[in-house]
Amino acid sequence: MVRKPVLEGFHRYIATLPLTLAARMARSFVPAFLGAMVFFAFILELVDLFANIAKYLGNDIPPLTVLRSMLLYLPKCLSFALPVSSLFAASYVFGVMYANNELIIVYGSGISIYGAALPLLFLAAALSIGGFYLDDRVVIPAQKTRTRLLRQLTGQKLSLSNAEITLIGKGKNTIWHADYYDDSQSTLSGPSVVELDAKGRFLSRIEALRAVWEDGVWSFKNARIFSYDAATGEMRYRFESAFFRQDLAELPESFRARKADMDELNAGEALDYVNSLKNSGLPFSGVMAEYHKRYSFSLTPFIVVLLSVGTAGRFRKNVLLTSLLLSLLTATLYYVLQMVTMLLAKNGTLTPILGAYIPAAAFMGVGGFLIWTTRT
Image (cartoon, rainbow, N blue to C red; front, side):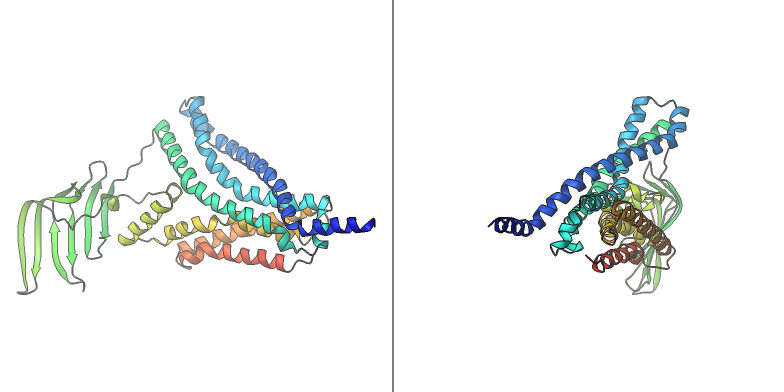
């Protein structure tokens, strides 16, 4: 009579264990994660402050402006701290559960390491998605503002004017060349435009002293126009002091110096930049790899938690310390592999997609294998 209520209570506990376990893990994970985020972000802020302190002092920048610069850098620090904080928090959860003998109950109830870690993996997936939008919507605008602020305070100027430009137009049937592009005035000096038909045969050529961007088209000044008449086989020539065509509307941005920093472009702007390089006939594999890396890198919190779970499940002593050290080692290998594949993608050995996603796919496979082969 005494044992029956006890057994019934135990069975009810086992039946509600997954929900209880999820709540328990969340209560352990969230405070550890937030504490690690604050700590690592603070360390990164200090590193940035000491790296730029000579610049601040040399330009007599007021303390309040320095504080503003640090606040603008804070989202970047949080972005950098996100993966390592996720790794620490996941290792901490399993370390605490082992120290409190809670893992014995979990494993004894028949729940696998995968089932036990499922709440953490859901949290890690949410952090990966949130991290991507944090970078795209908060980090990049803040970084742009900070860069402009520091350039203004230190007297640095960024010129987007360009010299000796040759590019392929958006329609793939025009080839543009200019001696110089003045970004402040949106003008081309010595422009030349060659137009080809669908089979790549010559149709016309426009040469001018200069061209001005007006009302959404290029207005060519003192233009000489050569055109080929396919019916007669004759070359025709005419001169116009001002000439424009609505279809010759290659945007001025296409002629700018290629100094765009991918770290300061959101996903949409980065894709436009890649397409502009592609349309200009310029090398684009490197920036294409960086574009895809933005998506693959957002998976890092999920990957490091997966690795942490896979390593934690293999130990029965000193779970926190051993799993944290082994997880840090595998995470370091992940970053090294990512550096290598990105380098191979930029020099053309790998395609941009493979260079960006091979590390993520490989270490997700490693994490899954570690979990699958763990005995519980």
